[in-house]
Image 1 (cartoon, rainbow, N blue to C red):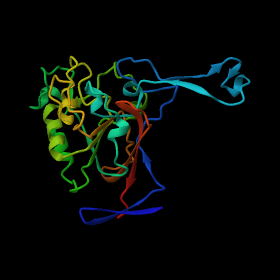
Image 2: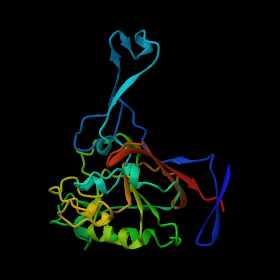
Image 3: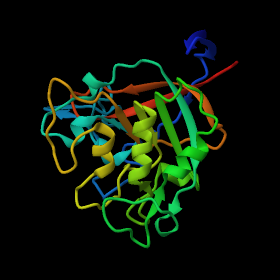
Image 4: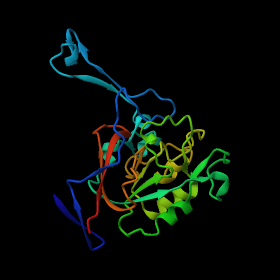
Length: 271
């Protein structure tokens, strides 16, 4: 189906039959990306009395119980409820069906090679996504398409789909990079790393707080007036998907929780 839409009084066209899936499929019991050495997502046949939910074991149908940790097992989308005492649900936050978005590729810098900072002292092993990374990659930006920002990091190999991140800690956003993203007015931020913050940051989650406008060190928000912005982590964008403008369809499971496994789909602009 050919769909036409308008951004800033300019017409654009997509083909809805050709989505580019940038999620990592959650392979229960198989290879998965993992952060913090959390329990892997798994599945098992449901057994109730004499019923077994597995046709291979004589059951009439497959009927499985799934166990997962959305923040650690793969592609997931989270909301401000991730850092607040108030139990805000991603299901109530994500109301945008189609999101004009920009895909960029950046190469994180060694922390000591950039003037950008983090909330604490830099470590020799730190790699930062910096404000300069972002501003240089966004020189082609089209006004109106920065509702969504999708960041692909280099190197970009397929191991991101099954990587154990405790072996080599991932890059994260500098304070200045996140302040820049906030200034741009980004509403939906997507990245191919497990977190916008350093994996071990004493629980500060500085970048999360900056993005959602929550006072650093606080878990308090006004339950009647809170950020409707989202962060999607652990995506994978193959090299064949080029930097540029897209229409994003961000799909989530209808979980009443701060985060949900998600399936972001990109639609290339045809004109």
